[in-house]
Amino acid sequence: MSEEAASVDESVLRTDVVIIGAGPVGLFAAFEAGVLGLSCHIVDALEEVGGQCIELYPEKPIFDIPAVPVCTARQLVERLTEQCKPFAPPIHLAQRVMQVERQEQTKRWRVATDRGLVFDTAAIMLAAGNGAFVPQRVGLPEAQALEGRHVHYAVRKRAMFDDSRVVVAGGGDSALDWVLALRGHARHITLVHRRDAFRAAEATVQEVKRAAAAGELDIVIGTIAALNAPDGVLQSIGVKTIGGATAIEADHLIALYGLVADLGPIADWGIDVRAGRVAVDTSYYETSVPGIFAVGDIAVYPNKQKLILSGFHEASLALRKAYSYAYPDKKRVHVHSSYDATLSERILGSQAAEEVHS
Image (cartoon, rainbow, N blue to C red; front, side):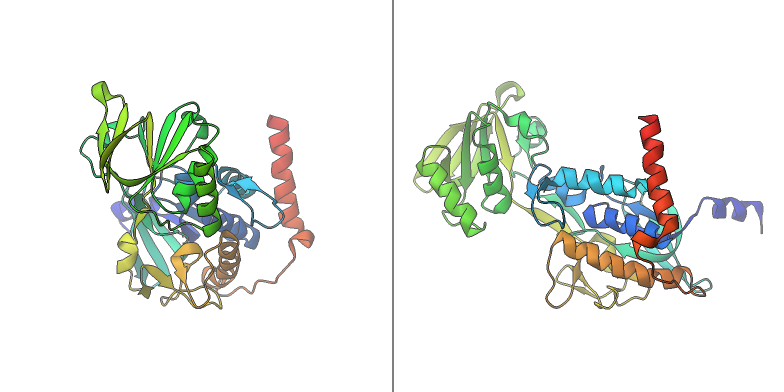
């Protein structure tokens, strides 16, 4: 082997599994990989872990995680990150997997990102939620300059809107949920939607209407037509209504029009994709291409339930099949975590080490 070839090989990261997606399901998959004795790397296009939970509703309460009566989306991500710590899975953020190539000689995969990372892996797990996604933005030329200060596509810190005049635009669950969550915190809150029918849960719609009737918030039927921001400071929002136009005094606009989902390069990997989701066999949540798995919201199969807890189950089973690709000559014997001495030592040892350094 030439020196040049050797240097190229040294730059390749060898691992058992590459997990694409650092949302809750991807993070739990990294923990479960460690439990099974598999090494893994996580890659995510976003700039922080947490996926859609952090991108869209970090402070929204979640009630259906087993043994956790209630936690915010951010708290869930923090707990899952903490759970992963004993195995220290490397997490590579702000980059997308662009190329996936089967290595016929080794029966492994070569995976490359848009920032130059290259992996040699036995299996690939797609835990990418809706794939690469971006929020639908306000289609006004003045909006971009106000993003992050006055125009927002997610609520990252509720305190930012305390004692402010807030307009929330949209008619889905996220828009109505945040209108309700911000009442009592914002000085005044207005919901703007293009029609008087909403796409949210009926109970939420009724609660919003009751709050409006009680004077806790306003509902305006119309579309955002102008952002009045002299000197770069938002003062009011122009709304086109059926009867003409109106202006709403506002310090912030939260536009929750939904996401534009795009599988990106995943669509070109030769796997069975149906209506923007990846079809899997529910035995091990493997795609039509052996060695590539899909779990969480990106996976589709009969009676699919788009729940975080479903994704946890899918990841657990998928990794058991991934183990056979990583160690084809080794039979794994199932051991309950309570009786796994090695696992216990690793987790308890990690906790003890943290207590010493804290």
